[in-house]
Length: 256
Image 1 (cartoon, rainbow, N blue to C red):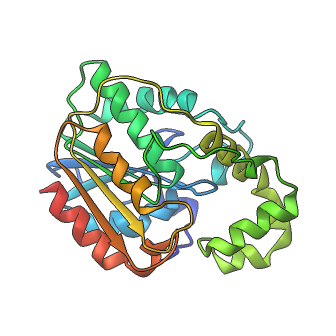
Image 2 (image 1 turned 180 degrees about the vertical axis):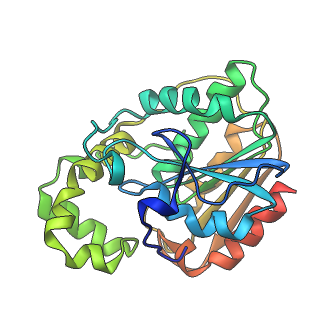
């Protein structure tokens, strides 16, 4: 996705947790988007712009960043899912789909599980990007405990952060608490046994992403009794920045 700088006036606030950049009241489907570790709702602005008015895109804003930077980060993914579901429920007045990248993919999955367990209509689609299957945790994931310099070096190496942010050391330091909290949520997350989803799952990965092997991506199939599809794109963890048009086209096909 192309990186976009937004001012507060650009945003249409719905709650502290949700952002609608291009409200589409008559859209037949609502797509909830979940950011990666250290990411924010504004990452999904290009998706919202591209899919409007065919889909009403609502981006989730986690605590601890941007306009929520003074709030405590939620560093437990199960707690985060519980809180997000409560925020989304009033917006499920039409068919909904979920799209998450990296940490956001795990979160979207847990949100879908809670929706189905509560008897809510199952999401019409779950798009999981840049994340191994919930049943495939990796041992010794300790990035969230690393010194600041090591944590920042890792982020720079993934090529998913705006160069302007990387060049501003004061700004970079200010995002460290959210980044560290998100990494803790991602690395300490453990899948809990339970029924598979009924929602279709579509997995998207970069073919050179060190965070997701081909086997780890394919294992998402174990988490749904519905249709499953897997797409691999050239590139690393943030392959979707370079393949935005293809990703948008895939989302559009999955939502109609």
